[in-house]
Image (cartoon, rainbow, N blue to C red):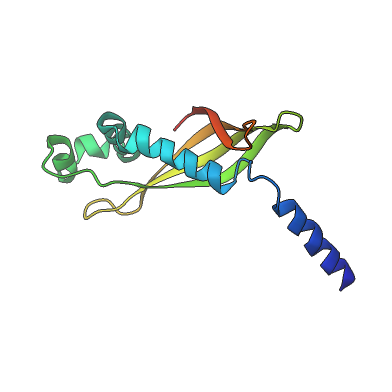
Length: 140
């Protein structure tokens, strides 16, 4: 029981430090916000991701023609970061090089559970003020 209490106390102190890492809530929120700004709110990128996920049936299957002629609105995907990994870490500079799977999921009356996974990379750093800084965001 004492060992369990000691381990709990150690992990409690570790949790009190800064929240700078590849999978911190701040990093995940910032990456999702960047995807929102650069993909979801960009008509070309938004349509391109949907076309990439749909593949050839989008162009050849008549039931999907509404997406191409604009009579059907392309559904907004849900995005989720999965399998977040630390590719490298520099303890001296608190610099994380991160990798993750960015999953787009579409659902509407025609497409059900359509998924596209993009393999992304990004860097997470701590600023001199102790804040989070995301850079080198690629692959989204």
